[in-house]
Amino acid sequence: MVVRPLDTTMSEAITSVIIASASAVAKVFVIGAIGYVSAIRPKAAPILPASAMNAISKMNFNLLIIPLVYSALASGVTPSALGSLWIVLVSGIGVICLSYAVASLLGKLPFFRVDDRTDFDALRIAAAFPNIVALPILIFPTLCEFPVVYNAFYEGGNESTDGEKYKSCVDESNAMIFVYFFAWNLLYWIIGYPTLVAAGKKRQMKNDATLSATEPHNPPSDNTFDNEELQVKIDIEGDNQERRSNNSTAASVPEGIDENVVPDEDAQNGSEARRRLKGIMTLFTNAIIQTLKSPGFVAMVLGVITACIPPLRDALFSTGGPLRFLGSALESLGRAGASVGTLVVAASLVHQANAVENSPAQGADTEVGALNVSTSNNDEEHSMGATGLRESMRRRRSSLSQLSIRVMNAIKKRKPTLRMHFWFCISRLIVTPAIVCLLIIAGDCGGILNGFPNLAKLVVIVNSCLPGAQLIVLTLKSRGLSESASIVAQVYLPSYLFSVVTIAAWTSLGLIISTPNADGSSFCNR
Image (cartoon, rainbow, N blue to C red; front, side, top):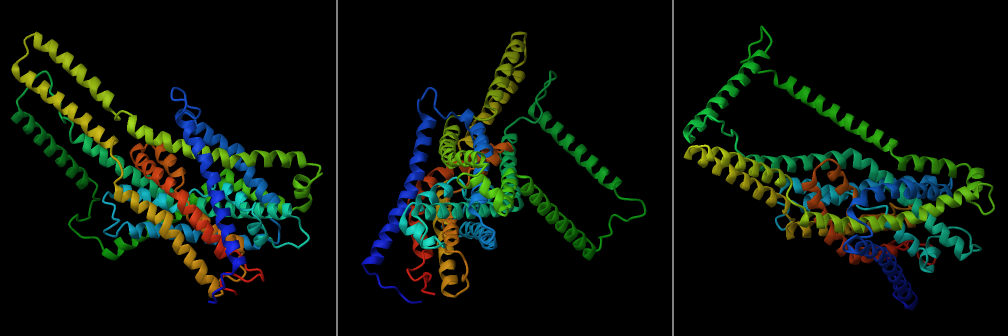
């Protein structure tokens, strides 16, 4: 590797790169700050209330992001450039898998170990799937405003104007972002969604088991009995249930087969392997179907088809084209999508954090109501001459109900540990992008990345350093797994704040790595 001299021109270029990246990131977080304030002010009726988040998010994706996907690909991709986009697709798959591996490995180290396995499963999926739409499509248009960026990545002739170079930079970066998003979407349905839901269900089952352990199994009837009789009744019922289970198991054995004979181990292993293979194929098929059915993928396909038909593309997106009014309307809608998405993400983080702090424990009202009814009924019975044993059982039932409330309050108020925050931020915002940068430098210096578009290197680096996607929280909440959703949301908030610094740093380094020299050579002077 040849070290380039750091002369005045180089110093000015590096300064311009740092200013460009800082400006791009500052723009994103100014919009995010507006979303944050809109979620809490005015205090009585916020501009972006929690009840409106789902509707606004759905509107943003279907009415703003979809037109952006279509118009960016239709106007920014040329048939000759389609051959290089597969590199972005493969890189996206590799970076997402790398992110998952880094989070998994760091989470097993003693210093970073996450003790709760269900939280660990959910959070490492969150660490693997960053927010690669709302943030990048705000960052890159700002980066492309700087001459040091649009001049470096423009591959057209010298006679092109600065406006044409800027538009080319924005269109190409958006096209690469959405191709990367296709890889994200595919892996999310294959790996992310099933693992996420399974982790959430484990957490919910664990909480239900904790709560059920505090509830009375056999509430007393009018014919009261003492504690010893209660325990005997429970034991008898348990024995009867076990006997019924054994009888049903015996009945399930076909006639003529000795139930004591151990089945062939090879046959069992083969059957298990076939079941696993069938499960993997089903999972992969469902993921493909979900991806192909998604509106984003349909918009991508239509955009590529339009780009491959020059007369149609010119009619929609060229000045004076007969269908320019339609293309212009789509572009106008699309330009608002990134800003609205960032507002929604910032506001959602605030509402999720507030919900964890302020919402009553799930089931607490029901328990209190049951407690009041129980107390009322027992008071009437006591006034009618109930025995002291009945009063003792009432107090026992009341204490158990109160214990259930305390357990649910403890579950709902459970917060991530400091180690959990540290592990997530280090793996998502520092270690993964550092490895990606090292791999790109190694591939560049080794000649492996010859022909790899320079702008694609920057897109991959920026996408590798972004905080987690809001879709993770929404998925858990939509499945009724609010406990896991609250943990992920609480981890997200500080990671988004910390990413103000890390995104600017990695974007600056990414520009230095990906920007070609004046003679057209790469970072390693190749």
